[in-house]
Image (cartoon, rainbow, N blue to C red; front, side):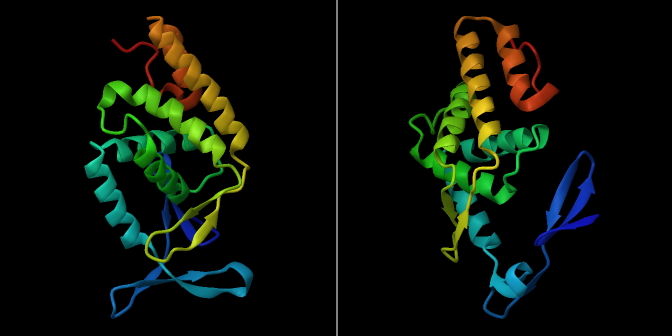
Length: 185
């Protein structure tokens, strides 16, 4: 285990789980410690985030959570310096605007490709946290990785369109690693 800013990273199998210490208040809110800039207490948005994610995921055919899982795999595989909550917020925002957000798994290739294009446009932007309305900066340390992933996703979609399964599988592995098989029938 080790500290990383506001959280403690706890190794779990091949992934680290972020744990933040919080205190439940009598009004139901959760207070967390913020060690930045000399320290202070903040109200956690975890419950509001969970409620919103559940609603969006239900509304859009389970696609929000599926996209989040895929993007977190990319984050782990390519060491992308975006926080998990930032990926979740961006995926929720994207899925609400994506033209095919109600469709099923057949459209996941386009969803991933289009999410990377959306992500690139969000460099140096921010996300708004539900519950508190706090604006969190995204920065752009991750931008080159997103651009590389977008190029690979475009190539994978093109290969799939041309029925070149192994080329598509190779392009997807450039993004997600060997969790993606070289050929999917």
